[in-house]
Amino acid sequence: MKFGNYRTLIVLTFAQCFGQTAAPILVLLGGIVGAKIAPSIDWATLPIAIQIAGIAFATIPASYLMSKVGRKAGFLAGTALAIFATLFAAWGIYQQSFALFCIASFLIGNYIAFLQQFRFAVAESVPNEQIPKSLSFLMLAGIVAALLGPEVARRFSVIEGLPDYVGSFLGLAAMLTVSFLILLLFYRETLIETRDQTSAVRPLGKIFRQPPLILAIASAAVGYSVMSLIMTATPLSMHEMDHHSLDDTTRVIQGHILAMYVPSFFSGFLISWLGVQRIIQAGLALMVICILIGWGQPDFINYWGTLVFLGVGWNFLFLGGTTLLTQSYRSSERFKVQAVNDFLVFGLQAIGSLSAGILLASIGWGGVMVFALPLLLLLVPVIFYFGRSTA
Image 1: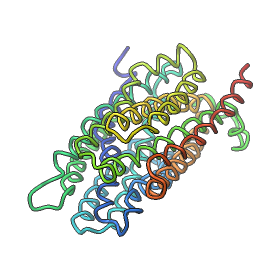
Image 2: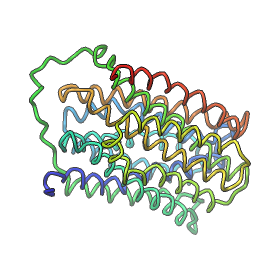
Image 3: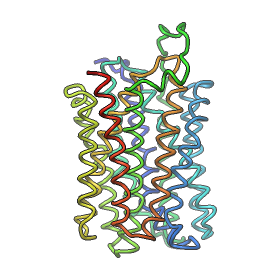
Image 4: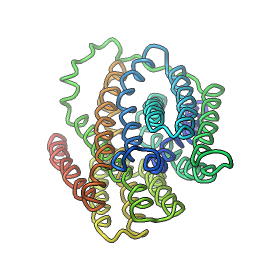
């Protein structure tokens, strides 16, 4: 394996190690900060939901921008926006302004839409048969982010002379600056093969009627919406309602994010060996198990077990869906299909996240579990339809 052939994968993996810390820090602290400065506890998880809405809002603009100016300029612009947004979040907490913090969360979500394009840049830079393994390798950056992000948030949560958690977002700005420098100094544009550019671009209706593409979007959307619903509710339920310590809450979130990405050591190989459909089925089964564990007592081990199974299930659903997605469009159609896919996936994720605070306040942690189950069952007929189409 030559370094030059995998330069994009290696550079983006290192950049994502630092850039992806934005998500776990906001997941850990969004609800906690919200509970302190929001006008009502019902709105505590709104910053996390707004962040995810920011992802959905920016998916199409991010894809369009990169189609015009290239991946590198788009990645740099998105990361610069994130650095500004984290400083703005720190200012919002300092001012005890819930509105400013929510605006900053939305802008951080805009950045994550750019970060999500890393996986497409990697898929475009390697041979087709290497896509599952390469995407798995890229997702390993989440392990570093899972350890680094919450640790930065915790260690800098209390700084003398500043309100709690201002330092956490200043630390995040430093992490994002490292990511920006890696992209600036080492990332190079990938030349896309143009063998199918002369083919007519198919109508969107025809593209999105393909069974593989339907399953790709459904598995990622269900995985993300259920994961976001439960993950968003966890810190608020653990720390504010069940009075677990911030250290215990941090361990659960770290365990969850590790569970999201540690399977990437082998999930790409499993896709190549067992096939995408079986991996998606396994992901669905793991998420059902997560809900069964979540119905137990609100002890540390229940929270931890729920979030670990949730993370592994998400990994299988998301990686399986992304692999199918990259096989469902021509290179001339890639920006359009990628934009629509991410808009649908992260739009549904935003709904899941926004529902978390409302469900938690009205019917409690058990209600969150009950609400998640029908969402998972929606995936069953889609898997069956895909299986019939490939039989």
